[in-house]
Image (cartoon, rainbow, N blue to C red; front, top):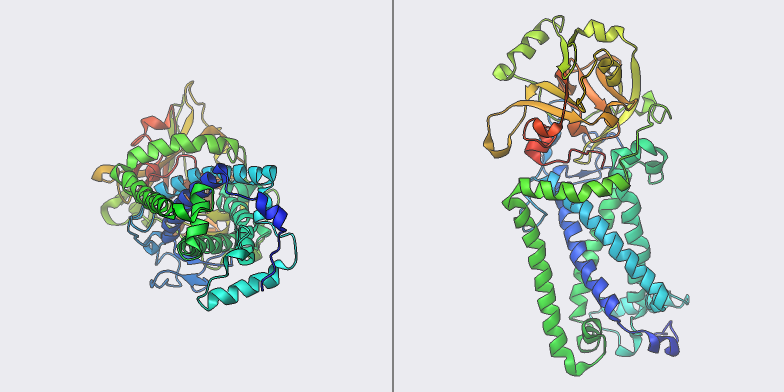
Length: 514
C-alpha cells in the first residue's frame, strides 16, 4: 500500500479552483509557442556545446549531418542553418528573426502567468498539492513509478489530489525546471554577458547555459506530451472532470472530455496559426513585434554596457582556436573597388566620414593606425547561438567621429560596406550591406573600428580591412569591409527603414542587445 503524503484533512481542502485551471491552460498554450520558436532558433545553428569556442567537433550533440571544415572561412554559420516546416517550428522556413521576437514576447507572458500562479498557489494554500511535506513522498513515488512501468495505474485513493510521483514531477516543473529556464535565458543576451561577465560563469559559460536551456526545453517537451497523454489514461472520469470542471463528478465525464478535446484542438490550431500568420507577411510581423518587444528591452537590457575589456574577463589563453563567421567577402563584380584595394594591400584604402557634417573627412589605414589604439579580448555573440573569443585592435568609433562636426539633427550613425546584402526584401536587386547605430551605442567604450584580429591584420573572412566591433549587441550589426561612415537624421530613411541590412531583409531587430 502506498502511503499518502498529505493528511486527509488537508487533502479535502484542495480543489481545482478556476484560477488554477485557467493558468494551467494558458501555460500549455505558451509552452507550445516557446518550444516551437525554440526549435526555429536552434535550427539556425543546430549544434550544442559546453565550450565557448564552438569549434568543429567540439559539440556534444548536433541536429545536422553537415560537416564543418577545420579551416576558418571555408564554411559559414549561415551555411549550417536547417529549414524546418511551419508545422514543426515557429514560424519556420529559416526565419530566426521572427522566431526570436515570438520567443521574447511569449517568455514575458509565460513568466507573468507563472508569477500569478505561484502567488495564488501560496496565497490560497493550494501549494500543498505540489510541495511535498513528508520524506515518504520518495518511496511512494518509486512505488507509483513501478506501477506505471508495468503499464498499470495507481488506485484512485492515492490521488489526493495527485499521487506521490505526480507531486514530485509537478514540484520539479514549477520550482526547478521553470526557474532553470528563466535564469539561463538571459545568458543568450550579449548585453547581459558583457555587463555581468560573472553571470554565465555560474553555469559553466555561455554555451553551457545554452545547452542547459536546451535540456530544459527538451524536459518540458517530453513532460507536456506525457502529461497530456496520462490525462486520458489515469482515472480520466475522476481526474479529467476535476481538471476541467473543478469537481470530481464521473457523471460529467463526457462533458469534460469534450471540452478537453476542443481545448487541445484549439491550442494546436493557435500554434499553427501563429506560424502561418507570421509567414504571410514577414514585414508586418516584424513591425508589430518590434513595438511589443522594445518596451521589454527598455526595462531590461537597454542600459547595459559591456565591461569585458575593463574587467579583463578574457585573456589570450581564452582565444578560440576556431572562430565562426558570417558573410562572404566581396567577390568578382560584386565590388571591383574592394578587389582593387585588396590587390594593392589596402594602400589606397580610404575611410570616408561624411553625411550630415560640416566638413567630410577621409582617412587611410595608416591614419587610423596612428590614432590612439584600443585592444580588447571579447566574446562575439551571434543571434544564431554560436560564440567565439578573439582579440581585436582598432580605434574607438567615437574618436573617429570626433574628427568631424555633425550638423543639428544628425542623430544616427550609418556604416556602409563594400560588400552586398545576401538577399533583399521583396526580391529587390542586391544593395550594399549597411547598419545604423543609435548614439548610445556609438558612445560605448568597447565600440571600435577593428583593423587587427589576434595581433594580425584583419583576415578577409572577418572583414578586412576594417570592421565594426560592438560588444554589447549581437554580431549581425557588426558590419565588415567598411567603406564609409555617415551621420544621418533617422535610420528610418535608410534602406527599407528598419535600421540595417539584416533588419531589412532578415527581419531582425534594430535593437540587438538581446
